[in-house]
Length: 255
Image (cartoon, helix red, strand yellow):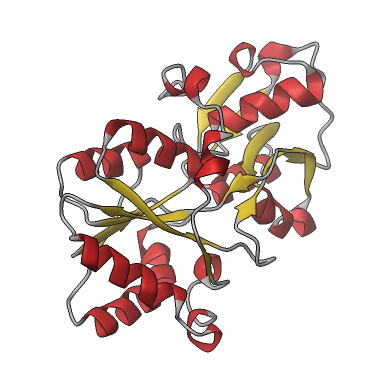
């Protein structure tokens, strides 16, 4: 069995974050699970289409896109956030030291995570429109790859504003990052199965094992997956309204 993700951290940190959960599943399922870390959501989606991946960890936007292109996609369960809820927010952020002059659009640099990240281009565009009635296309934007790099690039002064996950942004407040605007509540990250490579019984077993995992077990897992699980709420995904963004998200920065 193969598990893949594109995480907030580099490959080594991602392995440390998810290994305890995978080892727990291996023990309960009595089979090996290979870990594959990808840098981009596009690569996981391609591997999913080619039936090279059995399980994956997806944010709401890439999951919505995956479901539209791969009928074998089966959302299993949603990972809870630190507050115990199965939803989170994206944030528009800046350094406390910077003043933003939206009249000088061409001088504003925007740091983004990656093209198919939910808190990347899509939600940052929405937040900018809501906060300052401005369009991201008129600014200079580039992709940093991870939420942490978005925060650090702004703190270093390389970018003026950025988009990232709200609870990660809060971790950087002590370093001078401040939140300007937050998004609507979005469905949390989801564990997804490939019905072309896993049987219905295997998928049900994986879901049962994780939903029944006791707190004393999952609280020892990586930080982002240590708060338990919830059933998938498909209505929340429908509320994302991604149609207008799916084919207009630039896959490269503009500078």
